[in-house]
Length: 254
Image 1 (cartoon, rainbow, N blue to C red):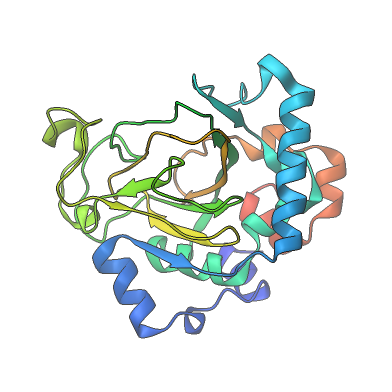
Image 2 (spheres, rainbow, N blue to C red; image 1 turned 90 degrees about the vertical axis):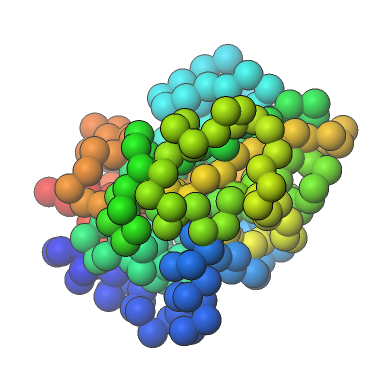
C-alpha cells in the first residue's frame, strides 16, 4: 500500500480542509483545529501520560530526547492504543498532507509536559536550515491535553516565518527573547494545532503550579529519516493491532 492509498483509506482527503484553513496554514504556518479530542479522550490520554511518567522514571523520553524542567515521553506508538488517533485522525492527516504532499510518514510520537517554573525554549525550527517557501520537509501537530494559556507555557509561533526562507539560528541574536511578531497558541484542551515545522516556534515559561501537557505527532516526507525509526521500534502487539493503512503511515509494513 502506498502512503497516498493509506491516506485515502483513513479518509484524509484534501476536501476536509476549507479554503480558509488551507490559506491560514500556507500563510501563517499553523492552524488550530478545535474539538478534535473529546473530554473523555483527553482524560484517557492524560491518565496514560501520567502513568508512563511514573513507570519510566528517569528513563522517560530517553528513546528520543530528555529536557530539564519537563516530563518527556517518546515512542508512544508502542505505549497504548489510545495514542493511535494521533497518527490516523483524518483531518489532522489532511493538514499534514497539505504541507508535505501525499508521500509522508510519521517521524515520531512524543509527549512533553512543561513543569512549573520551567519549559521556556528558544525559538527554533524542526529542520537544520532555512528552506524555500513551499519546499517543506517536516510538519508537526500538538495535541492539547490541558488548556494552553499564556500563563502555563503554551507554545509560541512567529506567523509567516515558514515563508521567510530563514532559520531562527541565523536570524535571531537571542532566540529565547520575546519576538515582536510572536503569537501565543492559547486554546482549550482537545484542540490540535497543526504547524509547519519550519515555522519558528517554542515553548514558553510555565508560571503556574501545575504541568502543561501536550503530545507531539510529528511527520516527515517519506524520503527523509524518521526521528524514531518506527520499523526498529515497532512491537509485535502494536503491529498486530494496527490496520494496514496505519502501518503504512508508520512505514512499518512488510
